[in-house]
Image (cartoon, rainbow, N blue to C red; front, side, top):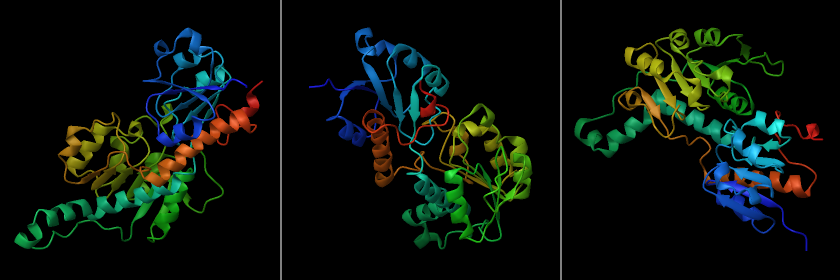
Length: 321
Protein backbone atom coordinates (compact mmCIF):
# COMPACT_ATOMS: atom_id res chain seq x y z
CA UNK A 1 0.00 0.00 0.00
CA UNK A 2 1.37 3.38 -1.03
CA UNK A 3 2.38 5.72 1.74
CA UNK A 4 -0.01 8.62 2.19
CA UNK A 5 1.05 12.12 1.18
CA UNK A 6 1.81 14.17 4.29
CA UNK A 7 -0.07 17.48 4.70
CA UNK A 8 0.82 20.07 7.33
CA UNK A 9 -1.96 22.13 8.95
CA UNK A 10 -0.54 25.00 11.05
CA UNK A 11 -3.02 26.60 13.43
CA UNK A 12 -6.80 26.51 13.35
CA UNK A 13 -8.72 25.87 10.14
CA UNK A 14 -12.34 25.16 9.23
CA UNK A 15 -13.20 21.63 10.31
CA UNK A 16 -14.54 20.77 6.86
CA UNK A 17 -11.05 21.08 5.43
CA UNK A 18 -9.83 18.44 7.84
CA UNK A 19 -12.89 16.24 7.28
CA UNK A 20 -12.19 16.22 3.54
CA UNK A 21 -8.47 15.49 3.87
CA UNK A 22 -8.09 13.13 6.83
CA UNK A 23 -8.97 9.90 5.01
CA UNK A 24 -6.83 10.71 1.98
CA UNK A 25 -3.67 12.09 3.56
CA UNK A 26 -1.45 11.91 6.59
CA UNK A 27 -2.35 15.13 8.44
CA UNK A 28 0.25 16.74 10.69
CA UNK A 29 -1.09 19.53 12.92
CA UNK A 30 0.94 22.20 14.71
CA UNK A 31 -0.13 25.26 16.69
CA UNK A 32 1.17 27.83 14.22
CA UNK A 33 3.41 28.26 11.18
CA UNK A 34 6.71 28.10 13.04
CA UNK A 35 9.66 26.07 11.74
CA UNK A 36 10.64 25.24 15.32
CA UNK A 37 7.44 23.19 15.63
CA UNK A 38 8.34 20.92 12.70
CA UNK A 39 11.19 18.51 13.48
CA UNK A 40 13.78 18.14 10.74
CA UNK A 41 12.91 14.49 10.15
CA UNK A 42 9.28 15.49 9.57
CA UNK A 43 9.98 18.66 7.58
CA UNK A 44 11.40 16.72 4.66
CA UNK A 45 8.26 14.61 4.37
CA UNK A 46 5.76 17.47 4.11
CA UNK A 47 4.46 17.90 0.56
CA UNK A 48 1.37 20.04 1.12
CA UNK A 49 -0.01 22.67 3.50
CA UNK A 50 -3.57 23.76 4.27
CA UNK A 51 -3.57 27.03 6.19
CA UNK A 52 -5.89 29.76 7.42
CA UNK A 53 -3.61 32.64 8.34
CA UNK A 54 0.06 33.41 7.94
CA UNK A 55 2.69 31.25 6.29
CA UNK A 56 6.00 33.06 6.01
CA UNK A 57 9.29 32.64 4.19
CA UNK A 58 10.98 30.64 7.00
CA UNK A 59 8.41 27.88 6.56
CA UNK A 60 9.15 27.54 2.85
CA UNK A 61 12.87 27.33 3.61
CA UNK A 62 12.22 24.66 6.28
CA UNK A 63 10.08 22.37 4.09
CA UNK A 64 12.32 21.28 1.19
CA UNK A 65 9.77 19.04 -0.51
CA UNK A 66 6.75 21.29 -0.20
CA UNK A 67 4.67 21.47 -3.39
CA UNK A 68 1.47 23.37 -2.55
CA UNK A 69 0.07 25.77 0.06
CA UNK A 70 -3.73 25.89 0.00
CA UNK A 71 -4.80 29.09 1.74
CA UNK A 72 -8.25 29.60 3.26
CA UNK A 73 -9.51 32.99 2.05
CA UNK A 74 -9.69 35.10 -1.07
CA UNK A 75 -6.96 37.34 0.35
CA UNK A 76 -3.62 35.57 0.70
CA UNK A 77 -1.40 38.40 1.93
CA UNK A 78 -0.46 36.25 4.94
CA UNK A 79 1.31 33.79 2.66
CA UNK A 80 4.72 34.86 1.37
CA UNK A 81 4.11 34.26 -2.32
CA UNK A 82 7.56 35.53 -3.29
CA UNK A 83 9.13 32.85 -1.12
CA UNK A 84 6.68 30.33 -2.55
CA UNK A 85 7.67 31.18 -6.09
CA UNK A 86 11.36 31.06 -5.19
CA UNK A 87 10.89 27.55 -3.80
CA UNK A 88 8.73 26.41 -6.73
CA UNK A 89 5.64 26.04 -4.52
CA UNK A 90 2.12 26.65 -5.82
CA UNK A 91 -0.18 28.78 -3.63
CA UNK A 92 -3.96 28.64 -3.95
CA UNK A 93 -6.76 30.76 -2.48
CA UNK A 94 -10.57 30.61 -2.37
CA UNK A 95 -12.00 33.21 -4.78
CA UNK A 96 -15.54 33.40 -6.18
CA UNK A 97 -17.25 31.33 -3.46
CA UNK A 98 -17.41 34.30 -1.08
CA UNK A 99 -18.04 37.13 -3.54
CA UNK A 100 -21.80 37.27 -3.05
CA UNK A 101 -21.62 37.04 0.74
CA UNK A 102 -19.09 39.87 0.99
CA UNK A 103 -21.05 41.99 -1.47
CA UNK A 104 -24.27 41.42 0.48
CA UNK A 105 -22.55 42.36 3.73
CA UNK A 106 -21.14 45.49 2.13
CA UNK A 107 -24.60 46.69 1.19
CA UNK A 108 -25.89 45.85 4.66
CA UNK A 109 -23.02 47.76 6.25
CA UNK A 110 -23.66 50.72 3.97
CA UNK A 111 -27.35 50.82 4.90
CA UNK A 112 -26.54 50.43 8.60
CA UNK A 113 -24.09 53.31 8.35
CA UNK A 114 -26.36 55.68 6.46
CA UNK A 115 -29.68 54.87 8.16
CA UNK A 116 -28.28 54.04 11.63
CA UNK A 117 -30.27 50.82 11.89
CA UNK A 118 -28.18 49.32 14.75
CA UNK A 119 -28.76 52.49 16.80
CA UNK A 120 -32.47 52.35 16.01
CA UNK A 121 -32.70 48.74 17.21
CA UNK A 122 -30.78 49.63 20.37
CA UNK A 123 -33.30 52.47 20.95
CA UNK A 124 -36.17 49.98 20.73
CA UNK A 125 -34.51 47.32 22.89
CA UNK A 126 -33.73 49.85 25.60
CA UNK A 127 -37.43 50.79 25.82
CA UNK A 128 -36.76 54.31 24.60
CA UNK A 129 -39.38 54.12 21.83
CA UNK A 130 -42.09 53.58 24.43
CA UNK A 131 -40.65 56.12 26.90
CA UNK A 132 -39.33 58.85 24.63
CA UNK A 133 -41.03 58.37 21.29
CA UNK A 134 -39.74 57.76 17.79
CA UNK A 135 -36.08 57.28 17.00
CA UNK A 136 -34.61 60.55 15.67
CA UNK A 137 -34.70 61.07 11.91
CA UNK A 138 -31.44 60.01 10.28
CA UNK A 139 -29.57 62.88 8.63
CA UNK A 140 -28.29 60.72 5.77
CA UNK A 141 -29.97 58.74 2.99
CA UNK A 142 -28.92 56.65 0.00
CA UNK A 143 -31.12 58.74 -2.27
CA UNK A 144 -29.31 60.56 -5.05
CA UNK A 145 -25.87 59.34 -4.11
CA UNK A 146 -22.85 58.39 -6.21
CA UNK A 147 -20.63 55.49 -5.15
CA UNK A 148 -16.96 55.06 -5.89
CA UNK A 149 -15.38 51.63 -5.76
CA UNK A 150 -11.72 51.56 -4.81
CA UNK A 151 -11.02 48.20 -6.40
CA UNK A 152 -13.12 46.44 -9.02
CA UNK A 153 -12.24 42.77 -8.86
CA UNK A 154 -14.76 39.98 -8.47
CA UNK A 155 -16.13 41.29 -5.17
CA UNK A 156 -16.09 44.90 -6.35
CA UNK A 157 -18.07 43.88 -9.41
CA UNK A 158 -20.62 42.07 -7.26
CA UNK A 159 -20.98 45.16 -5.06
CA UNK A 160 -21.49 47.33 -8.14
CA UNK A 161 -24.28 45.07 -9.40
CA UNK A 162 -26.09 45.44 -6.08
CA UNK A 163 -25.62 49.19 -5.96
CA UNK A 164 -27.24 49.52 -9.37
CA UNK A 165 -30.43 48.13 -7.87
CA UNK A 166 -30.56 51.14 -5.55
CA UNK A 167 -30.29 53.54 -8.47
CA UNK A 168 -26.84 54.64 -7.34
CA UNK A 169 -24.43 55.97 -9.95
CA UNK A 170 -21.13 54.07 -9.91
CA UNK A 171 -17.52 55.01 -10.59
CA UNK A 172 -14.24 53.27 -9.80
CA UNK A 173 -10.49 53.54 -9.44
CA UNK A 174 -8.06 50.72 -10.16
CA UNK A 175 -4.47 50.65 -11.39
CA UNK A 176 -5.71 50.33 -14.97
CA UNK A 177 -8.94 51.26 -16.70
CA UNK A 178 -11.20 48.35 -17.55
CA UNK A 179 -12.88 48.21 -20.95
CA UNK A 180 -15.44 45.60 -19.92
CA UNK A 181 -17.47 47.71 -17.46
CA UNK A 182 -19.76 50.72 -18.06
CA UNK A 183 -18.74 52.65 -14.95
CA UNK A 184 -16.86 55.94 -14.93
CA UNK A 185 -13.12 55.50 -14.39
CA UNK A 186 -10.94 57.87 -12.36
CA UNK A 187 -7.16 57.54 -12.74
CA UNK A 188 -6.43 58.54 -9.12
CA UNK A 189 -8.11 57.69 -5.85
CA UNK A 190 -8.36 61.38 -4.96
CA UNK A 191 -10.22 62.14 -8.18
CA UNK A 192 -12.61 59.28 -7.43
CA UNK A 193 -13.24 60.51 -3.88
CA UNK A 194 -13.94 64.02 -5.12
CA UNK A 195 -16.44 62.74 -7.69
CA UNK A 196 -18.56 60.60 -5.32
CA UNK A 197 -20.14 60.73 -1.87
CA UNK A 198 -19.81 57.03 -1.01
CA UNK A 199 -16.32 55.53 -1.15
CA UNK A 200 -16.06 51.73 -0.80
CA UNK A 201 -12.62 50.17 -0.35
CA UNK A 202 -12.27 46.58 -1.51
CA UNK A 203 -8.56 46.34 -2.34
CA UNK A 204 -6.11 43.71 -1.07
CA UNK A 205 -3.18 44.26 1.24
CA UNK A 206 -0.21 45.19 -0.93
CA UNK A 207 2.62 47.73 -0.58
CA UNK A 208 0.72 49.97 -3.01
CA UNK A 209 -2.44 50.09 -0.86
CA UNK A 210 -0.92 50.92 2.53
CA UNK A 211 -2.83 53.83 4.14
CA UNK A 212 -3.95 55.09 0.75
CA UNK A 213 -7.22 56.26 2.30
CA UNK A 214 -5.71 59.14 4.21
CA UNK A 215 -6.64 62.66 5.30
CA UNK A 216 -6.44 64.03 1.75
CA UNK A 217 -8.75 61.35 0.37
CA UNK A 218 -11.27 61.87 3.18
CA UNK A 219 -11.23 65.62 2.66
CA UNK A 220 -11.90 65.07 -1.04
CA UNK A 221 -14.83 62.81 -0.16
CA UNK A 222 -16.35 65.72 1.72
CA UNK A 223 -18.79 66.49 4.55
CA UNK A 224 -21.63 64.46 3.01
CA UNK A 225 -19.31 61.56 2.35
CA UNK A 226 -19.62 58.00 3.61
CA UNK A 227 -16.62 55.67 3.71
CA UNK A 228 -17.02 51.87 3.75
CA UNK A 229 -14.16 49.39 4.12
CA UNK A 230 -14.57 45.66 3.52
CA UNK A 231 -11.07 45.07 2.12
CA UNK A 232 -8.20 45.40 4.57
CA UNK A 233 -7.61 47.72 7.52
CA UNK A 234 -4.10 48.17 6.10
CA UNK A 235 -5.63 50.45 3.45
CA UNK A 236 -6.78 53.13 5.90
CA UNK A 237 -5.00 55.73 8.00
CA UNK A 238 -7.16 55.01 11.04
CA UNK A 239 -6.08 58.12 12.97
CA UNK A 240 -6.99 60.30 10.00
CA UNK A 241 -10.35 58.55 9.67
CA UNK A 242 -11.21 59.00 13.35
CA UNK A 243 -10.29 62.67 13.12
CA UNK A 244 -12.33 63.15 9.94
CA UNK A 245 -15.40 61.60 11.57
CA UNK A 246 -15.01 63.63 14.75
CA UNK A 247 -14.53 66.94 12.92
CA UNK A 248 -17.21 66.41 10.28
CA UNK A 249 -14.74 66.18 7.40
CA UNK A 250 -16.88 63.22 6.30
CA UNK A 251 -20.35 62.30 7.52
CA UNK A 252 -20.03 58.63 8.44
CA UNK A 253 -18.09 55.40 8.03
CA UNK A 254 -18.72 51.68 8.16
CA UNK A 255 -15.86 49.26 8.79
CA UNK A 256 -15.61 45.49 8.75
CA UNK A 257 -11.81 45.41 8.85
CA UNK A 258 -9.10 47.03 10.97
CA UNK A 259 -5.34 47.45 10.99
CA UNK A 260 -4.67 45.43 14.16
CA UNK A 261 -7.49 42.89 14.40
CA UNK A 262 -9.15 42.05 16.69
CA UNK A 263 -8.10 45.30 18.37
CA UNK A 264 -10.28 48.23 17.31
CA UNK A 265 -9.07 51.79 17.94
CA UNK A 266 -10.68 53.28 21.04
CA UNK A 267 -11.41 56.44 19.08
CA UNK A 268 -13.76 54.50 16.79
CA UNK A 269 -15.69 53.04 19.70
CA UNK A 270 -16.51 56.50 21.00
CA UNK A 271 -17.84 57.92 17.74
CA UNK A 272 -21.59 58.01 17.03
CA UNK A 273 -21.24 58.21 13.24
CA UNK A 274 -19.45 54.94 12.59
CA UNK A 275 -20.79 51.39 12.15
CA UNK A 276 -18.40 48.62 13.20
CA UNK A 277 -18.40 44.91 12.40
CA UNK A 278 -15.90 42.26 13.61
CA UNK A 279 -14.64 41.17 10.16
CA UNK A 280 -17.73 39.14 9.30
CA UNK A 281 -18.20 39.88 5.60
CA UNK A 282 -17.87 36.22 4.55
CA UNK A 283 -18.80 34.77 7.93
CA UNK A 284 -21.80 32.59 7.15
CA UNK A 285 -21.83 28.83 7.55
CA UNK A 286 -22.72 28.37 3.88
CA UNK A 287 -19.87 30.52 2.60
CA UNK A 288 -17.21 29.29 5.01
CA UNK A 289 -18.14 25.69 4.17
CA UNK A 290 -17.74 26.48 0.48
CA UNK A 291 -14.35 28.06 1.17
CA UNK A 292 -13.28 25.00 3.14
CA UNK A 293 -14.38 22.75 0.32
CA UNK A 294 -12.28 24.73 -2.15
CA UNK A 295 -9.18 24.50 0.07
CA UNK A 296 -9.58 20.73 0.12
CA UNK A 297 -10.26 20.57 -3.62
CA UNK A 298 -7.05 22.46 -4.31
CA UNK A 299 -5.03 19.94 -2.31
CA UNK A 300 -6.83 16.97 -3.83
CA UNK A 301 -6.61 18.47 -7.30
CA UNK A 302 -2.85 18.91 -6.99
CA UNK A 303 -2.06 15.43 -5.76
CA UNK A 304 -4.76 13.40 -7.51
CA UNK A 305 -6.33 15.26 -10.44
CA UNK A 306 -3.55 16.92 -12.36
CA UNK A 307 -3.63 20.40 -10.87
CA UNK A 308 -5.16 22.79 -8.33
CA UNK A 309 -8.45 24.58 -8.92
CA UNK A 310 -7.53 28.16 -8.02
CA UNK A 311 -3.78 28.89 -8.07
CA UNK A 312 -2.84 32.51 -7.44
CA UNK A 313 -1.13 34.39 -10.30
CA UNK A 314 2.16 34.85 -8.46
CA UNK A 315 2.74 31.08 -8.41
CA UNK A 316 1.40 29.77 -11.72
CA UNK A 317 1.28 26.02 -12.12
CA UNK A 318 2.83 26.34 -15.58
CA UNK A 319 5.99 27.79 -14.02
CA UNK A 320 6.79 24.58 -12.21
CA UNK A 321 9.62 22.64 -13.74
